[in-house]
Image (cartoon, rainbow, N blue to C red; front, side, top):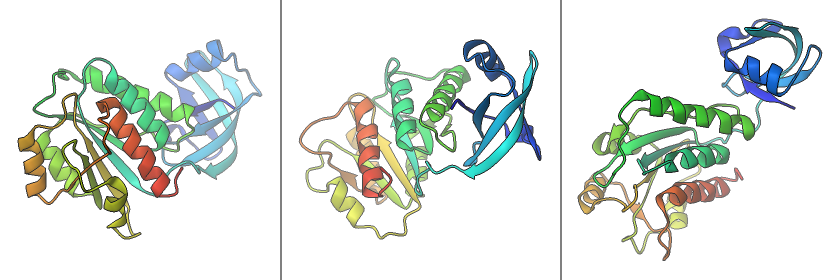
Length: 243
């Protein structure tokens, strides 16, 4: 069944209004018509099964049939702090991590970042990719893609999480499982910080350690920046019985 996200302001007692770009997609691409059913999500973990009752060039009016709580959202809130990679790698990272259950994505400008985000158009595009991936994976929310943070600011945000995960290729002892085992079951938030191509600068790692953040190893093989966050998130979701 087709699935779309709608603005909560367009949800009324018995009806939901769809507007914007989705109108053309529903009517011209999917060729849906009056009487057809679809699922609409308010981005707050509520799924509405609806029936189309009116179609206009600018909007589609739907009747609410049932309302259910979305069951695909993990219990833990995970934030990815991602060193900005080159090319379109960030798009891949956002797409795959959204499919795996990420809650928020923060692009981070580190010392070894080559790529620069110069305007809000890039952030808007990344947010749209998160939206499309959320539709495909039947998420109950759309992960927020934040504005770019500096490394120090990102570390402060990472420290606010119940568990912080910072993979570092020179770490040899502390692996991800033992790191997760050291925390109790009462975990609500996890932060994952991944470096760009070339990894973190040693000064950045020392800065993180000085704040009490432990580095972890992901094994003997060096992972690409576009693989590392996805791998850590998948392992985390498995560990938390969310996958």
